[in-house]
View 1 (cartoon, rainbow, N blue to C red):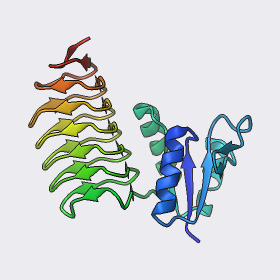
View 2 (cartoon, rainbow, N blue to C red):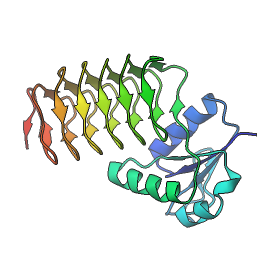
View 3 (cartoon, rainbow, N blue to C red):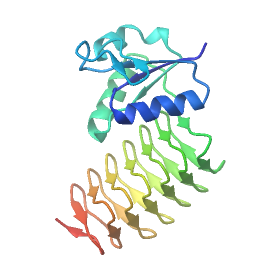
View 4 (cartoon, rainbow, N blue to C red):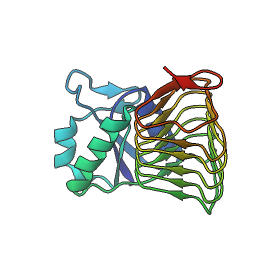
Length: 205
């Protein structure tokens, strides 16, 4: 039996678990730091906190971190990696990923997402429902591309940045680290580290 542990029992975690089931994972167990106040996440049990998961890593074939906050997700991934956790990359069968693209461990690609040739996606990224990452894009670790967002060819997104729902980024634009791009924004020029931008065209808030 293929057993997966998921750290983070949010709504996002539910979608990760559902995707894991579709991909053939037979046993899914959640861990969340709100335990023991919460003992279930929808159809799936919550059996402990991060501490309990660290003590049970050998019981699982793979671990995924389903925490929406990009920085916290990366911190948890690093802690699990140092403890010897085994990670996987989860791709929904209704997603389209080029065989010439590279997806790092801990990344999840949801239904309807498209990742085109020579795109490189770093560790712990979220490619959410119906987004597209075009040819030669580079996404560093911990990036979240929200549902329906679009990256044109050659875009670079820095570590832990977030592209909001329905946003678009023009070809060969570079987005820095820890950037937040607002919902529906159209990004037509480079964005420096740490900025929040929104609007059409996107401007600093």
